[in-house]
Image 1 (spheres, rainbow, N blue to C red):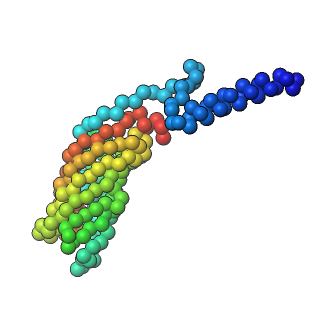
Image 2: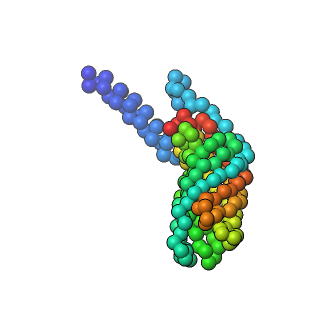
Image 3: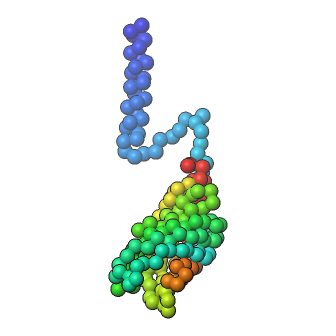
Amino acid sequence: MRGSRIPSMALASAIVAATLIGCADGARTVAAPDAPRLSRSVVTSRPIGGECTTTFVPPAFPPPLTFQQVDVGTCQLSHLGRVAIYSLQDINIVAGTQTSVVYTYTAANGDILRAVNVGTNTPNGAGVRFSATTTFVGGTGRFAHATGEAHIEGSASFITNTATYTLDGWIAYDASDAADR
């Protein structure tokens, strides 16, 4: 019996060693023919655009020179449909800049698209006009590996505590990533 165990153990050790060596250099391994295959995915760049409306709590009066603002609302965007938006931004009134700390678009099915935002703002009557560039940086579900960029143009009113903006750009994501959740 002992002699029959040695070849089995030697074979098992050789398989483990070959697997470790094959993985150690970052090389891809080939699955056994009867192993389930992952679907081949195609990521394509597509236009993204639409309109968003948010509400926010205004800063104290007189406003501090720099403050954080939370915006919540909805957007109607091509290829995504109606999405909920949440953003937390650092706003510098003196420099006329805004930078996102958190920026998310949540689709109806719960998939989240994350973005980073950098822009400028200028006083406009009882509010501000703003312009920004948003860069898509992944998320969850089908947006797990999303990339892209869009231009944002809009205005905010300190009377109604609302902001509206348009978004126009491109996005690339793999719709098959939704199955990986």
